[in-house]
Length: 188
Length: 345
Image (cartoon, rainbow over the protein chains, first blue to last red):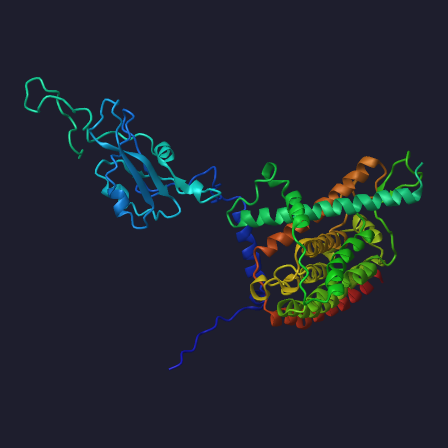
C-alpha cells in the first residue's frame, strides 16, 4: 500500500526561500562569537584516561635501581615480538651483586609495538609500564628502536611495592628486633 | 608639480596594490570567518593571529610544481587563467573609490577619485567582466577531461544567463540617475538618497546575480567540489590555479565595489561633510576609507552567505534566473519608468 505524504502548503513568502535563508544567516552569525572547540594540539594535549596504553617504558625504584631483572617474560609474551632483552649478571662490585640479573640492553621497537599492555601485565617485578605518550615520531627506523637508557628516561621512578632489596640480609621475620615489614609483598 | 601621466600611474599602482592586498586578505578572512561559524579558531600559526597566512599561501603557490598534463591544449590551457583574472582587475578602473583628492602641491586641479572617469562606466564594467567567462570556459575545454568540461559548460550557461539579469537589474538605477557614469551615480546618491532604498528590487536582484557571476555559493556550480572535483580548475596547479583563485576573489571584490557604488552611496555618507566631493585632503581620504569599509562589508556578506546556504541544483539555478529574475527585472523597469514619469511630470 502506498502512503501519501502530506506536503506542507507553503505560502508565497516561504516559497521564495528567503525566510529560511535569513534564518540560516542568523544562525551562522550567532556562532561567530560562541566558544570555540578547537584544541591547539601541540600546546594543548588531549585529556587521556588514566588507563590509557601509550608507549611502554622501563622504571626505576626510588633508590635508583633498574627494576627489570631480565626474566624475559615480556619478551616471550609480546605478540608482535617488539621486545629484545640482553640479560647479564649484576657486576660483582655493586652491593646487591648475585641477587638478580639485570638487562644489559632492553630494546623496544616502537614501530612493532601494538600497545597491548601484555608486557606490563606479565611483569613480575612491575618494571615495565605503559605511559601516556602517544606521539612517538622519528626520522629513521633505528631512531624508533628505543634502548634501555631511553626507556628508563621515559619511565621515571615508580614506588617500590615489593621491597625485596630493602630486606636482603635482614633478620628472619620472627626474630626479636626485626624491622617492621610494612608493605611487604604486593600492595592492595 | 607632477605631470598628469605620473599621477595616473601612481593612482593605478595604488588601486591595484590595495585591491590585490584586500583580495589576499579576503582569502584569510574567508578561512577565519568560516572557522568561527563552525566553532573553530581558523589559521592562527603564521604571524600574530595568522595575519601572515596570505604570504605563506603565496610562497607555497610559487614553489609548487606547475603540472602541465600531456592531454591538454597547451596554448589555451595557459591562456585561460590569465583571461580569468585580468577582467576583474581591469574593471576596477571605472569604479570611483573616492570623491577627489585636493593636493595643491601636486596638481592644480583636484585629482578625481577614479582611474578612468568614463561616461559609459557601467557598460564598460559589463563588457569587460563578461570576458571573464571565457577564462572559465577555455579552462574547462582545454583541460580535455570530463570534470573540467562539465564545469566549463555549467559556467558558460550560468554566467551568460545571469549576465542578462545583472544588466537588466541596473537599468532602473540609471533611469533614475540619468547617467551611466559611476561618478555621477555616486554624486546623485550623495545628494539624494542611496539607490538601495529607492530601488530595493534592483538591489536584491543585482546582489543575487553577482553571486552567480562570481561563482560563489550558493551558485558555485562550475566548481562544485563535491560533484565535479574542482570543476574547471581540476587540472590546474601551482600559480595557474592561484590565478583562478585570485580571479574569483578579485571578481568578488569588484562585485562588492559595484554594490557599494550603485546602491549604497559609494564613497558618501548621508550627512555633511561626507555627502559632497571633498574640499580638503583629510575628507578625501576619509571618503576612500568609507568606500573601502562598504566594500569590506559586502565581502563579509559574500563570505557569510557562502558558509550558510547550500548549493542550488542546476535546474533550480536556471529557473531562478530565466523564469523569475528576468521577468521581475523587466517588471521593475516598467514600474520604475511609470513612477519616474509621474514624479517628474
